[in-house]
Image (cartoon, rainbow, N blue to C red; front, side, top):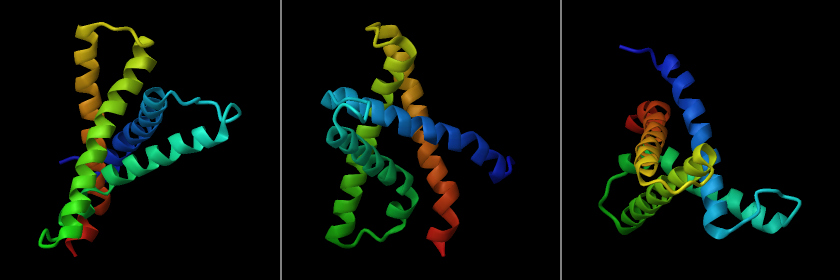
Length: 137
C-alpha cells in the first residue's frame, strides 16, 4: 500500500493544476481578463468563482459524510454536483487552452477530457485523504 504522505506529494500538485485550470476556464467562459491590472473586479470575480468551485470539490468527503435526511444537506449535495460539473468543464477548457492553445481537434479534445476527469477525480481523492478520518469521527 502506498503511504498517504507519498500520495500528498502526487495529489497536491494536481490540485494546484486544478485551481489554475479552473481559473482559466472561468476566465475564458466569462471572457474575463487574467491580468488584475485590466479590471480588478472581473479578476476578483474569477478568483472567487474558482475558490468556491474548488472548495466544494475539496469538501467532497465532508459533504457526503453528512446525513441526507434534511433539505439543507440535499441542497448542499446539489451545489456540490454543480461545482463538480463546473470543475470538469473548466479543467477541460483550461487544460485544452494551455496545452493545445485552444486548438479545436476532436481527438485531442477527448484526450483532454479524460485528463480533466482525472484531475477532478484526483482532487476528490485528496478530499478523502484530508477529511476522511476527521469526517468519520
